[in-house]
Structures are given as structure tokens and as C-alpha cells.
Length: 211
Image 1: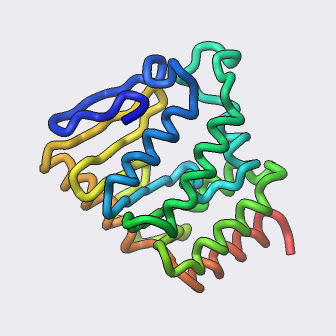
Image 2 (image 1 turned 60 degrees about the vertical axis):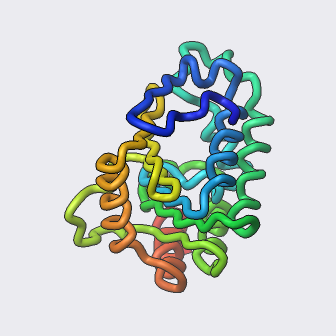
């Protein structure tokens, strides 16, 4: 597996200053390989649009900064990273892996001045209507018992990845994976799907962009 494959037991930490030494694209290929090997991928992305659902323009803007790099000039493969992230979208409807992706209104609100916002909301509306994978948005004011405060991906209920500003934590021990799975399922219970998600996204479009 590319870009420092996570261990299959215990906890491993992969700091970005080492993990991204060859650029941003290898990380995207690592995620693609993890998904390709899995039959179920559950992703909670409260502060960013899930990578597979980002438009190319949104992904390019996201890749323009990563605090794991001490020097902005280190990111020399943004085009390759965007292409690799965009290629991961095909996995949503091809292959054996089932995807369950969650986000919140935060990334749309926080980046309300981005010119990429209208196209990105349209992309999420399309995703909400898909029946080949699940995409949900956690609405504002949901009766949550916990906050969706960190990015989390779970593969087959056996490996959980949590992102920090400086790197990635991979948990492979059953109690740790189970705790992260419970957190994901609690957020999934609050999310809106299908036409309900479309209505929420249209409401956000009106609020953030205008009628």
C-alpha cells in the first residue's frame, strides 16, 4: 500500500511532515486503496466536505494549505492530488465497497465567500439523491448527545482513522474502533438523507448565496 500503510493492530500515528514527504497525491492513493480493500467505509467529515464529494475546484482550494507543511512551497503536486481525489469518486458507485458519508453545514458556512460554493452545494444535492451510496448532512440544531467534532473514517469496523492538524491516528484495537463506530452511528442518527437532505441544502444555498 502506498504512503505508509497503517498498522493492523494497536494505534499508529503518522505525522504529516513524514507522511506527506512525497506530496499530497500519495495520501489520496492510500485512501483509495483502503476503500478498495473494504466492504464498508463510514466517514464523518464535520469541518470539510468528504473528499469523494468535492468538486475539482473545491479540492484545489482545500489542497492550497496544509499545516503539516512548514513551507507552502513544499506542495508541488496539487494538480496530481486533485486528480487522485477526483478519481476516488468512482469508488462510490463501482466496486464492492459501500460508502456512508456524513458532513455538517460548517464547511459551507465557513467558506461562504468561496466562489466554488454554488457548484459544491449542487454536487452535494446530487449526492443526496444517489441510491448507490449514503450521504447525509447533520442539520443545525440537531438534538445531539455529542458534537461531531473530528474527522473520522472507519473501514469494515476494523480500522478507524482520526485526523489532527499535524497528522493521522489509526486505531485497530477492537475497543477503540467500537468507540469510534458508536460516535459515527450517533451522528448518522441525526443526519438528513434523500429529499430531506436536499431541502436542508437548498435552505443553506438560499441563506449563504441568496434566492
